[in-house]
Length: 138
Image 1 (cartoon, one colour):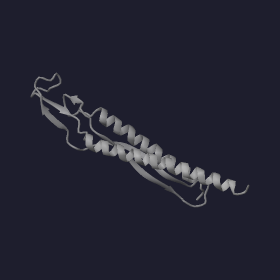
Image 2: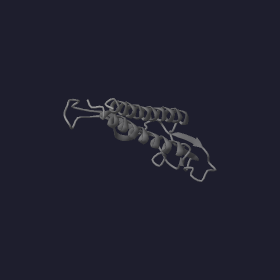
Image 3: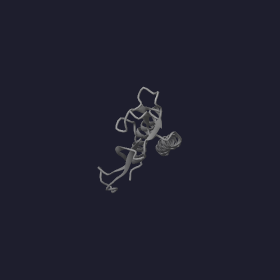
Image 4: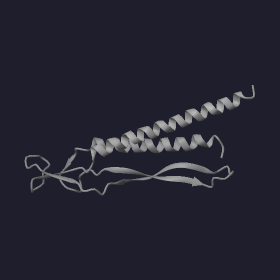
């Protein structure tokens, strides 16, 4: 495996973590959103990652890394509160709130941020190693 493939792998991981951070931001922005019915209520979303390991041989087209397979909605139950004076309350006086767990999302945000930072360090270290390798011939 070429040393240059490290850049491809780390950049695919950074791209995946960027999608994860954007999804978390969307979840946090809608954490306290209110809807009239369950169908209209916001549901937390999570990205699905898959490992890419195509023929890790000497082939020129071999690749490795992380790919975002898609984004799925959480199956966790929605919250329902009795607020008869709320303008979006249904006929029974209930409003439907999202199923976003703010604490879980904050923990996910820290994890994604650290993973992004780690991959940045991998790229920087690899770059330094390549530069030192090139300077050996001087």
